[in-house]
Structure formats: C-alpha cells, structure tokens
Image (cartoon, rainbow, N blue to C red; front, top):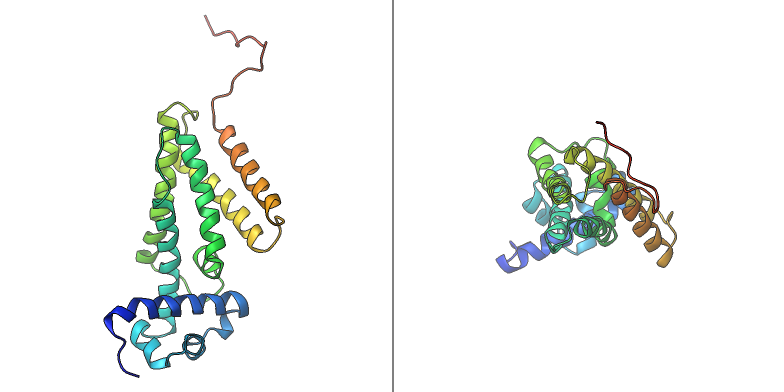
Length: 211
C-alpha cells in the first residue's frame, strides 16, 4: 500500500484508533489484532504497522488518544465568576466525554488488556486532567465557597464519583435520558454541598464561641 498522503495521515490514524477502541470494547482484547483493525477501516496491515509499529504501539496510542480527548473537553469548559458551578461543569464534561468515547473509556480508566500498563510518560498525560480538577477545587476554596481542605484529596473523591457514575451509565445502570441526567445532577450537587461551609438551620442560633 502506498504511504498515506500527509493530509490523510491524521484522518487514517484517528479512524484506526476508533476502530481499535470499538473492537476492544465490543469483543474484548482477544479480538484486537492489527489485521482486524485494518480490515475495519479498509486499509492494509502494513499501514497500521507503519503508523503504530506493533499492537503494543496501537494500544498505547489508543490510551493517549483517550487522555487527549478528555483533556480537550476539560479545556473547553468556560471559566466564570462562579467556581462551584464551573466545578460541576467539569463533572458534566467528564460525562460527555465518556458518552462520546465509550470505546476508549475503559482503556483509559480500567485494564481491559491485562498485559498493558501505561508507562510513566503516558500516565503524565492523564495527570493533566486531574490537575485541572485540583485547580478548580482550589478556586472554590480560595473564594470561600468550600471549607479549607486539601484540594488533592477532594479531587480524588470527586474523580471517584464521576468515574463511578460514568461507568454505571455506560453499562445502562443509571437509566436513560432524563433519569440518568437526574442522577448526575443530584450526585454532583450533593457532592459540592458537602464541601461548602455549613450554615445553621433557619432560626437556630450560631454556636457560641469560646471566651
């Protein structure tokens, strides 16, 4: 097969990564072969070798693509004057990315291929989105909207929440349509309320301070 033209390179690469993700998600790791991926896209195995080197290179590229797509979705969330609302929007962006890329989601956050472990450089790509979450939480703390605490610890908690919700939704366990929307919004709102300074119920006096 002739070498792809430069303007076709990225399009072919993206198509192969998506095809690999669909095969992995739909049929499991045993079905993920370079020949099968090439066939899905209508190209040759030689082209896949040329782009990724081997199967390990293809899987690593799929992992990095999943991380890059989540990073782009996070970067697109606008920053407003309300840091708590912005934090909730990051959670919803996580959901949108999982729904748009279910075929890459498990590879990014699970281990569907037992023999694949991302190296340190690859893991750093996933760290950028966690760091964005930490920065959003720190904004809430600095604005007095969250009780002072360790933003990294809060990020772990919120990351676990959205990961669990996304995993359940992708498996059809949150219901469909408005039911799934309701679960997401209720869970995110309850989570951020838990980190906000607690106010006494209406009519209840403030606790007396020490003298």
